[in-house]
Amino acid sequence: MAAPTILVFDSGLGGLTVYREIAAARPDARLIYSADDEAFPYGPMEESKLILRVLAVVGALIEKHRPDLAVIACNTASTIVLPDLRARFTLPFVGTVPAIKPACAASATRRVSVLGTEATVQREYTRKLIAEFANGTDVTLIGSARLARFAEAELRGEPVADREIADEIAGCFIDSDGRRTDTVVLACTHYPLLLHRFRQVEPWPVTYLDPAPAIARRVGQLLGPARDAEPGLSAQMVTTLGQKPPAELEKALFSFGIKEFGGISV
Ligand code: DGL
Image (cartoon, rainbow, N blue to C red; front, side, top):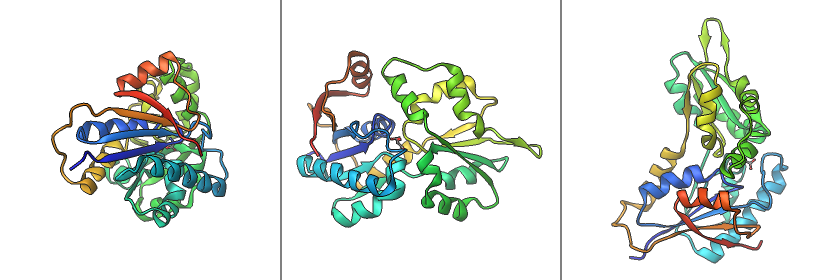
């Protein structure tokens, strides 16, 4: 049987944190990493526009690359657009949504924060996860309008100052009634790219929950057991702007195993 093709989609470079887990688990698959960089960031986009945009871009990618499975490696999109994608296309979709259930189950202090885009923390979907799974744990929602851009800058070799990162995550750290936040849900796929920076500026150590390993496991369940790696399989990055990445970013993408670049018109 031919190598399965997996499409991994995000607004920008954040989905690479999901892509790398899937690539490690599925050396037998052909991977296409796609970024809608023309419309990045999705955070401030109005919901109805975002739905239409994602349907159009993912639709064009499906038509061109015929994936066996698509991963929406973006919380901002997954928390609103998955039902429409599943209604329109027949292939299986795996989404990325805030890991509120495992965070609340794991928190010893029963204080959890959810760090995402402003859109993700406001979504009905996120509020429902809290209502269903908080189970008495105090959950604080922190929306950031800037961190996704900071993560992209980090990958481009232009890191922002510690102070700027500290300001964005400060709200996650609650210390009251003798209980401190001990778990922070990374509810935007860009944020694991900044994990080493978070650790440098955090007021006290916490566990950061990155959903990527769970997503890679879900992909494995849907595709069945991995076969032997096929020689010569290479990963490709496809963007809506279709530009060759600048040198620093290209170097970073090479380190993720991506060596081919292309575009998609929508
Ligand atoms: N990587 C994205 C997420 O998981 C979106 C960032 C953005 O485009 O605003 O939410």
